[in-house]
Image (tube, rainbow, N blue to C red):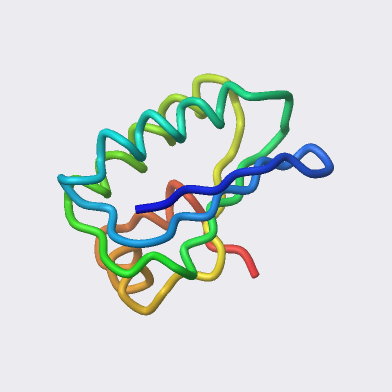
Length: 102
């Protein structure tokens, strides 16, 4: 699992690459928390175009980050979901928390 992040024009962009599951959850959680504390931004966009697999542990990681940012009133958006991620987000209702943007 790889995670890349950068801040541009007040937006934190996060790209998740690989598999977000029980084996990578701790790493992803820690890296996302580092990125979320790395600067000043008004919103977060998580790019899932290179996410190959996500299980319930991965869903928990994303919901946990959503809750942290909700407390700070910083919205999280999802872009470019892989077909696997799209199916999971639709089935679980995650788009209600983290809307999909184009």
